Structure formats: structure tokens, C-alpha cells
Length: 91
Length: 228
Image (cartoon, rainbow over all chains, first blue to last red; front, side):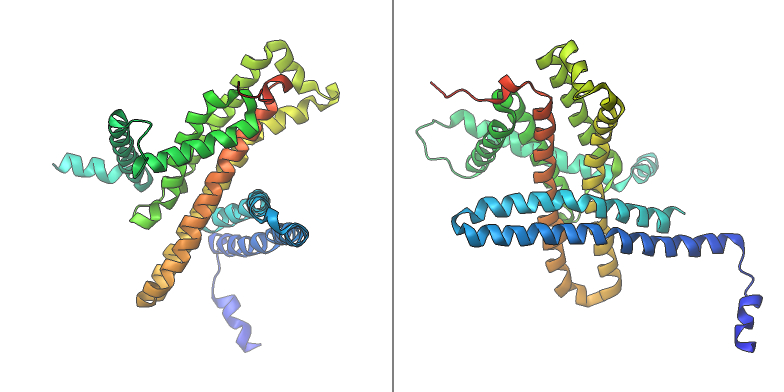
């Protein structure tokens, strides 16, 4: 068990522990929070593809609506990003 | 002089770049209005006049679609907001820190939207109908409606703030990590994080503002009667 002795010697105090957990939490927040927007934006893009293949002349309108919808969908991902930033820089 | 230096250093970088950019935009608009005085409508528009004509024409088309009759009041405001937000968002290209990477700037924009929303709700519906909107479809929805109104400026402001701030942080990481290689890598990332994200966020802010105001207007205001 000698290789684990650094855990005892390192003398991790409360502040270090909080910092480490905050960084870990930032990673978890980013990872879980980007699942939803990723799936949602993929669905929007696939539906836009279907729409364009059905109606190629409506490409311009479909692209605009798709980008607008994706930017709104992305908001939830942005929220988790903000939480991650707060955890890294403000805790 | 040292007083000025301490004062200058105490200002946040966002405020500095915001003041400089706003002054530059104001000068450009003054130049355009000076040119417009000499401009006859039979002339061919070119240069600044062409850009502003395209901007105002596009925005009033968008406003006609979203808020119907009120487009004459809202159009100039939306053009101003779009111009300011877009130049603020792409300020990273000119070496400024984007002012919209500060939460107070984006919240100033989004709270203005919120105030406009409620003012139009009261002015176009009357106080009684405006209050009645909160208990639709059933009185049970009162807290939900109030929360969904209150959360509007929050989500609008945080959306732009998060997007631009993430761009700023990622770009500073790239500059710090890549060294000389960032000369090759940075322009591509700037194109995405500044120009593309800035344009999309401006478009989203303007569209959502118009949608939220349009939701508050009565049905009769939304249809645009045919001109002439």
C-alpha cells in the first residue's frame, strides 16, 4: 500500500476538496447538459434535410428557420456552459 | 494624469470597448445622415446609403411579418438594436473585448425588450385585457404565466452572454496554447465564434423580441391591411 501513501501525506484541506469537486461538477454539467441540445439540433437538421429533399426550391427559408430553431434549442446547452464556467471560475 | 490613469484602469474592458464602438457607430450614422441630405430618390443608392437601405428594408419586412401594424414604430428600434448587437458581437475581430461578453450589457438589451413587451401589452389591449391575458386559458395558469413572462429577459440575456463569453474564453485558450500556430488556426475560429455566432445571436434576439411583442398584441393589430 505504499503507492497510496501520498493520499495520506498530501494533507488535502477543505478548500482544495471544494475546488476539485467544483471542477468535477463542471465536467459533469457540461457532459450531461450537451446531450439534450445535441439530440435536438440533430433532429432539427434531419427534418430540414427531409424538407429540402421534398421541396428544393424552399432551401433558403428552411435554412433560416432551421438555424433560428437550433439557436433557440442551444440555449439549454448554453445554460449548462454558464454553470460550468461559474463552477470553474467563481467557486 | 495619474488620476486619469487610475480612473482608466478602474473601468472594465467591456465598458471601454462599448463606449469606443458606440461612438464609432454614431459617427458612421451621422455621416450617413449627412449624405442622405444631398441624396435624391432618383439617384442610384451606393456605399453607406445602400447598406442602411438594405438593413432598414429587411428589418421592416421582418417586423411586418411578426407585429403587423406596429412595424412603423418598432422597425427603427429593431434596426438600432440589430446594428448595435451585431457590431458588439463581432468586436473581437477588431481587437476589442466584445461588450456582450459582459452580463450587464446583454441584460440591458433584454430588460428593454421586457419593458417594451409589457408597455405594448398595456397600450394596445387596455389594462383590463392585459391583466386578463394572465389568467388564460384558466385562472389556474396565473403563476405559470407570470413566471413565463418574468423569465423572458433572463433567457434572452443569458443566451447572448453565454454564446459570446464561450467564444471569448475559447479564443483566449487557443491564443494561449497554440503560440505561433494560432496565426493559422485563429482566423477560422474567429469566423465561427465571432461572425457566425454573432450574426445568429443577433437574428435570434431580434426575432424573439418581435415574437414576444407580437404575442402581447391583440389579433386585430397583427393583420396588415393591403396598402392602398
